[in-house]
Amino acid sequence: MRRHSHLLTSLILVIVACSHAPPPQTATVVQQGTRVDPGYSINAAELRRDLFIFADDSFRGRETGTADAQRAAAFLARRVQQLGLEPAGDSLYMQRVPLVRQTFGRATQFTVSLAGGRAQTLRLGGDVAPVISLGEDMPEPRRSADGDLVFVGYGPIDDAEAAELTRFDLAGRVIVALHGAPAKATKEHAKRLLSQQALGARIGHLMAFRPSAIVLLMAGAAVEQYDQLSPELLRSVALEGHAGVASDTTRQLPMLLLGVAKQGSPLLPTGWPNDAAPQQLGKQLSAHIEIDRVPFTGYNVAAVVRGHDPRLNKTYLAYGAHYDHIGVIHTDGRRSGRRAAVDSIANGADDDGSGSVALLAIAQQMMIYRPRRSVLFVWHVGEEKGMLGSAYFTSHPTVPIDSIVTQFNADMIGRNESNSVALIGPRAAPNYQSWRLGMIVDSVNRAYPTPLHIERASDDPDDPEHIYQRSDHYNYAKKGIPIIFFTSGLHADYHRVTDEASKIDYDKLARVSRLMLEAGLAVANRSSRPTSEMLTESISSRQP
Image (tube, rainbow, N blue to C red; front, side):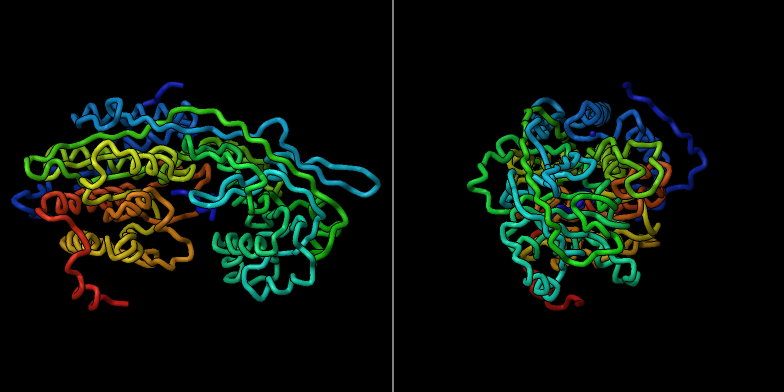
């Protein structure tokens, strides 16, 4: 799952024997004459075997733009070929995605002018990391900035806090703010101040002052957010043709830099952390960013199980997952007083190795059941770089986009409570376009002897974490396609090197995968599309 910014050797086969795994629990579902046989279903042992391969160190975190991601794509393509699926890319099972690697050029420099004519250069990555894009359809921040440094303490997250800063003349200045929670904050207040919503609020309120630049320094527990964000910021990727080509004369947003609050930093008051009062620092920042762009090709992996009904098999139920992750994380353990981690590879077992291997298991079963409609499987590249693979597929589909009747997206489905899964889309998607689809999935789940508990808090247009907008289904939904996003939600190992295959709940992963399979069979065997038509009665009677 992508962190919301508004922001990659040989294959080692690890076979894990699980001969004594309990028999899978499967509901008997009948749709248009197709019965799911409890003797043929997805089992935890096969998922475990595949994920210990896919989330192994040999793939080095599968970061988009590296050979590691290409090896991961090749692994998936070989597997679907072995299963007998039809190729659905533009080059057999691969869809070529034109991408651009964006790196910082030699002219990139950040200099703080000190008293007595002295100057101190800030290290790229070690001290600050520039945000060069705020996402699709958003203006770009400036690439050059100069101005007096003004420290504003913990940046404002509401209008009242922002109003307190009006005593400073911040227009054209360089604002330095902390992101985190003061030591005196209560646990609940600290959680709020450390949230991504607070991060976005701080940036938004500070931009309203029209500064030349904003420097947001992570403090305390927020330092780990910098560790997680910096690989994406320092090794960014864009779709070819979408990379910024504007000049600074047309860029209206201030330069945005993220960093880590460290005692003695020239960006902070001399007495920090004891002195955190808003104040002018009597220093100036001069900053310039140069971006070098190198084109390369990434790959979506796409395959089809052809439906058996000649009237319906040119339409598709689509399953999606992203196979990329964030690669190798380089951190400085001294920065936050922690010892440097020995393991630097973020294997992404849950994010999104769990969804990737679930799709392999579902594809194997779909080859057995062969529903009326065809079933399209797409493993997307570049989700962690801004949902690039799904953006490209939905704008350059290898099947007609209007032939896709539904998209099921699996992203992080193997952790947290063993009997719970979130279904996002029925309420969060606009115009109730996914409402009927949600009813179908719910009805399949209720048929189980022990149904999964459906978590619905994140299925809300006003969800403060904007989970609905943070994975590949979002690009399909923007095309008007009904979607369901299956996820177990975030956890303590999200975007960390500790997201390992050994921590996955494989029984849960199997149960969620079977729900996706059987709900998919229900959709793929229907004569009609799961549209939002004729839902007036259902919508009016829904629970708040």
